[in-house]
Amino acid sequence: MKFNALNPTHIEHLQAMVASDRFSAGDSVLDLHARDQSSHPPHRPEAVIWPNSAAEVAEILKYANANLIPLTGWGSGSSLEGNPIPLKGGLVLDFSRMNRILAIRQEDFQADVQPGVVYQDLNEKLKHTGLFFPPDPGARATLGGMIANNASGTRTIYYGSTKDYVLKLSVALANGEIIELGTRASKTSSGYDLIRLFVGSEGTLGVVVGATVRLAGLPAEYSAAIANFPSIATAGKAVFEIMRGGLNPAALELLGPECVELMNREANLDLAVRPTIFMEFHGATTRQLAEILQMAAEICGEQGCHGFKPGLGRSERDRIFQARHDLGEMIVRNHPEERIKVMDVAVPISAYPELIDAINAEIAGTDLVTYYISHAGNGNVHLNILCQKGDHKLWGLIEEIVDRLVEKTLELGGTATGEHGIGLGKRKYMVAEHGASLQWMRQIKAVFDPNGILNPGKIFPS
Ligand SMILES: Cc1cc2nc3c(=O)[nH]c(=O)nc-3n(C[C@H](O)[C@H](O)[C@H](O)COP(=O)(O)OP(=O)(O)OC[C@H]3O[C@@H](n4cnc5c(N)ncnc54)[C@H](O)[C@@H]3O)c2cc1C
Image 1 (tube, helix red, strand yellow):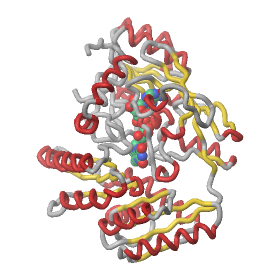
Image 2 (image 1 turned 30 degrees about the vertical axis):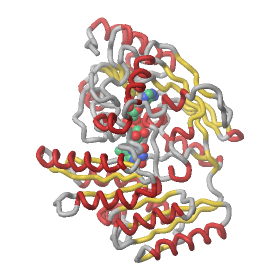
Image 3 (image 1 turned 90 degrees about the vertical axis):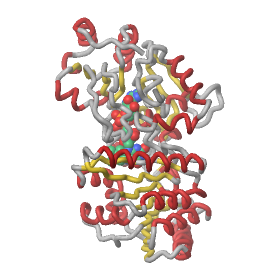
Image 4 (image 1 turned 120 degrees about the vertical axis):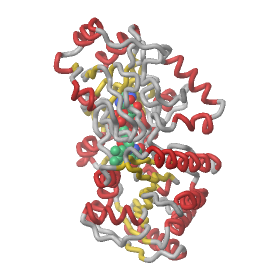
């Protein structure tokens, strides 16, 4: 696709569409919108606009489409695969001013939101209603960014990912048309499911300008436990057995000892520095949860668990899960001189122990510094691998290791990305993962965005 660079006439037109404080081509603003939280090289847009209504977004899109100006949506920029990096320059639409919660309908378990609402703010607002929005990526992400990436989190094993919570979507298309998708009914079998098409499309098919999301009731009772293991491999087997046993955890996270050591240091915790499973169960009665915890303890014991600590109180549980959420940022903060490769593979749960064996086989005998972080109940592994900045040879070797692990993951029936999306870094795996259906994805892209202005350079291998 050939795009036009912004010229003075474009800038004049675009500036006239929004208030003067909502358009900028200043250096610091462009720099702030040039990179996400990944290690992909930055690329600046030519201008940033902060729309404050769906109508404004539609008008900007119509103009950008007619003038072949690339346009990329921006939530919080917390992606980990270069998803919002404006690779071809052009415009970034920053949704931080469209951050209103428009309605909360407690009786229907629903909320209407603008795309720039941050999910923690939504949950804060819901605190006194007994309801919450379950998907919980570690960063302060917006609903628009979560919908575009189909984000997940520690609770996905029980509550599902963002795609399971979108009932209605308002989408501005490349031609400036706004379409309304879905209904407020909790189920439907009416027509093609266009919502699922837009969720996870990383802003390449349309721009989310509003959503109705489903909410869940806060659990009546919960219980949390920590289990330590002699190795990641034995912990992985325990994860599989807990899932196979139908214990239905609300969170089942596995961390390597290096992560636990970092969390102890940074969050003032006092956990045993060993491969560790954090688990949580939600239920109606404490008695039911006590029985489940007893079964989990037995399963862990059979896999050589060193220490099983059940019945964590609310404050200890919250401190541990907060540290778990902050772990990604802790790693970045503690390694300012390193570039970090974050793997995001996911396999069916029965293959989880085999994936761990494959990772161990790749890492054993190398000097690589790694952090093993896993939404284990979903078979989703984020191996973080560190590389001294500027060491291109080592980075190449790390890429080869990750390529081999993705290949193994696909053999096991898994995916190259459990939750971070394709962005820039995973485009190379699209053919291997999707085969002939990739061609149908390209055709869908051409239907919605014939000029290719929406977040160009993403998802599809060039
Ligand atoms: C420390 C840390 C931990 C993380 N943990 C997790 C995790 O556990 N699970 C997980 O899933 N992710 C995780 N992430 C990744 C990230 O937080 C999620 O992908 C999140 O959904 C991105 O939201 P955002 O608002 O920052 O979107 P951005 O990064 O700004 O954008 C994401 C994508 O959405 C597009 N976009 C933004 N707004 C719109 C819109 N209104 N319409 C259409 N397209 C739009 C962008 O162009 C881009 O392609 C983590 C990130 C960090 C830094």
